[in-house]
Length: 109
Image 1 (cartoon, rainbow, N blue to C red):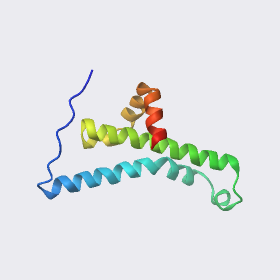
Image 2 (cartoon, helix red, strand yellow; image 1 turned 120 degrees about the horizontal axis):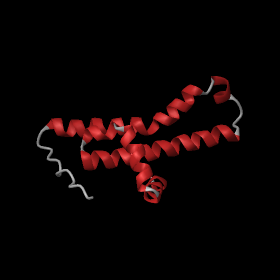
Image 3 (cartoon, one colour; image 1 turned 60 degrees about the horizontal axis):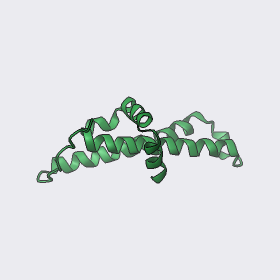
Image 4 (tube, rainbow, N blue to C red; image 1 turned 30 degrees about the horizontal axis):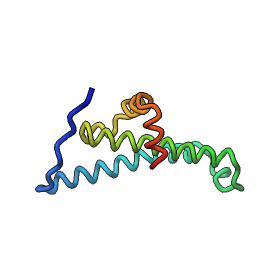
């Protein structure tokens, strides 16, 4: 089932440009949210201690999950409108339905 893409934006008014910029900022905040949650969950002593492998594996995983959310959010914003960029439940469902293609796109980012 193919959806019709949204029409090409016309930037004749400042509001359209501003809303696209706000959507871009929101998607990037969403992209780094897993890393921020990880830093919030870890105590300060382990952040300042010597680097350890489990911590950096968790950081890499949080960044990868954030990249996956960003890929799905950009796709949702482009195909279904700006408000769908923040629909996390749809991003997770779409990621698993896309299978290997979603993993390839995330790895490319």
